[in-house]
Length: 441
Image 1 (cartoon, rainbow, N blue to C red):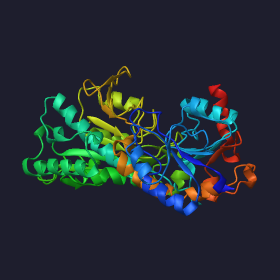
Image 2 (cartoon, one colour; image 1 turned 45 degrees about the horizontal axis):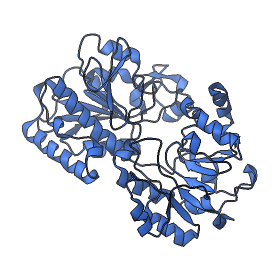
Image 3 (cartoon, rainbow, N blue to C red; image 1 turned 60 degrees about the vertical axis):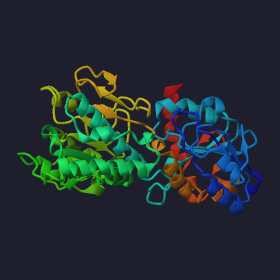
Image 4 (cartoon, one colour; image 1 turned 135 degrees about the vertical axis):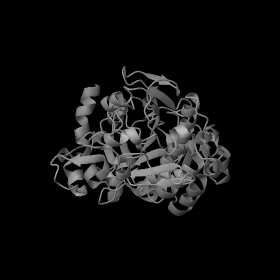
């Protein structure tokens, strides 16, 4: 039955800055020949791959996707765009019961839709299979360095980071890297201002996002040190030609067992986080900048609390200037990330005493870089990477018979785990979302 379906690639219209696409022209051409399923691409004036590029690859470009049974997108879909009985494949951001997206999910249920969420396409060990790889980390570190430069300049500290621009300004990733290499050469030759040398940048996490952030930071003259080095008294001693200190924090660095004499056990921590307490805030006084790249859930201790920031800033300007919250969980691991931002207004200062925020880099408190859609700042490379993964799952998406009930739905296991709702009903693994839907109604 799969070849009877038309599959539509929707334009991204939820966010003005979103220019990515889930499937690029070359890959859609390959899929058309391989699967035989007719594809349609919704016209978009801002998408990084133009309408002409899709047409040149033999893919029809249309204004709407009314005749498509399966609609593939990226970000949340506006409620008024949803259509009855359709299959939607996208990042729904609903599995944690996110309040902002409960009305969208409720509408999907009312319309009898099927929702397949990329975030839950996982293997037998629960590892995600469809993602943007390290592009959030790449863009996030570029934007964090840009923020550092602006903040230090506002404080009256001329610095080489002022030469860095936002990731979205560069023509492509290679141009951004070249610019940062140039900054690195200046630092290696002339050093950093005395007030901020050595400059300590902490990165939490070691997965794909962290690897992307490190890929950018490693273009600069760095000295890598373990987290324990920041717990020693006295200044960090580094080679003057490598004055940027990189510290990568793992779980055992960020939490402490409740029973002091017990050693850290990663498996125990993931299974029983209640046996551990927060331990990251002891490093904050030694960091100039923090780049957060971890996945976080409320059952885990926070990295940075509002109270810790209030204490840190009570005596004036501390060492910490900037927090690049690449993970961008609002009031999550970084509790002072009180809102997500977009590339045209990417940073704000959190005022520790009042909890108020001010757009930009001026004011008393840490500057938060909390862009929610960071890979969109490197749209062409990020789309190509994502499409290269997704195209391997499209044949199975196209071949399934969505007229069957969920138990009989013939999707491969990796995709079936990602079906949030089917025929307008939450599937067994996601019925706990019902309480959040009730709260939102």
